[in-house]
Each structure stands twice: as structure tokens, then as C-alpha cells.
Length: 246
Image 1 (tube, rainbow, N blue to C red):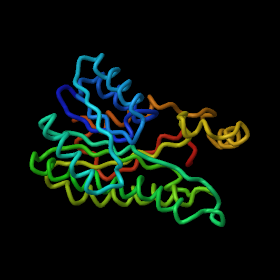
Image 2: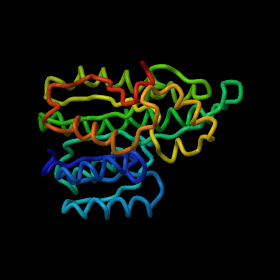
Image 3: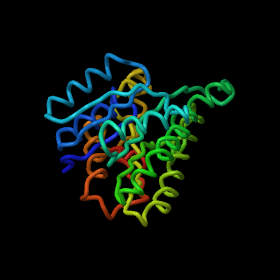
Image 4: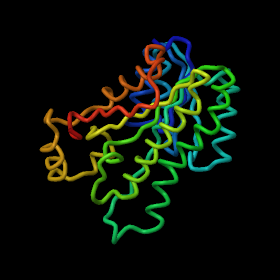
């Protein structure tokens, strides 16, 4: 499905990002694993990707740093020759109620989740426009659509990703570059593992399918959106949440 394509995945060392790297590699894609700080996890993911007989390289990057993103994207384009797909998966949380949330809590989450998405698209888009093809997949969240107590910063960042997705889709469509977003619900990752058992059960009681999703299910959707099979889909926000948002 992605044979010979070069795919850049931010937050690619763990969780959903790692699953996307592996699924894309299984479909024949070469992978640029972009990560924030865990060298061991990034190297392990790259090694797992290479087992599919494709190329993988790792790049440490703070996606909220505009100039660093510019340099890293240029390096990836040079190393791989092209960037056919971009997955903006890097994300952080700093959950607390409004009255306890600090300015630093707010700025950190918006910086990585929202500005980071802008930074990556800003520097990758010119390459795709020149090639007259490309796929951009942004990771939003159901809380970006519904809101969630204790996650004002995270919800705001993920709602912003929806706005970026739809605007970018309109701007780049004339050159056959698509931009879509995925809005996961309750997915089993390191992030959700931090929740207490009571919190997890409380959320699951609102999920019609009665279980949390897994990273591989999200990865399958991401790989579809990166493929030629999704060439006529752009500007969409696709929920993968077991019915949580219904």
C-alpha cells in the first residue's frame, strides 16, 4: 500500500506513533522516526521497522522549535530524497483543572500539540507542493471535539488541530496534497495508563463498545489515509473511539 514511500512520523518512538511506524513499514514505507527525547525507544522502533526490509532513521527534535523543525525537515528530505507522508503524532499532556492550571501548563501543551503541528506542516508542505503529491495526517482527539474537564489545554490544542487540518486541506488540495485528522478516543497507551482504575472504568462506561482501543487500530487508519486509496479524502476528522462521541 505504501511501497517505496517515505513517511515522517513525529512522536514515533512509542505508543500510537510507534504503531504507525511499524504498520507503515509493513506496507513497504521507509520511516523517519522523529522523537523528543527517549533515545533507546527511538532506536528500538527504528530497529523494528528495519525488520520489514525498509529504511529507518531517527531524528531527535522538539517540534515546538520552529527553526529546529526547519533544519530537521531539510535533513530528512536530504537523507530520504523526498517526504511523501507526514504524520503529526507528537503530543503531551499537563492535565489539571482550570483553577490549578498554570501558564506553563497551558503553553507547553499548546506549544507541542498545536504549534508543533503547524511547524511540521509549514516546512514539509513546500516539498509536497513541488512534488504535486503528499499526505498529511494530524492526530487530534475526541476531546478536541467534545471538551473535557481537567484538559482545557489539551482540548484546546486538539480543537486547534482540527482547524489547521481543514484550512491546510483547502490550501494544498490544488496540488493533490491531502490533509486529514484522526480523533482517537480512549486508546491504551502510556498516556492513558497514568489514569487510575476508577478513572479508566468511568471512561469505559461511556464507550458503547465497552473497551479501550489499541494503538494498532489507530495505525491502520493512519496508514489508509497515507495511501493512494485515500486520494479523494481531505479535510476530514475521523473519530476512532468505540462510539464514545455518539
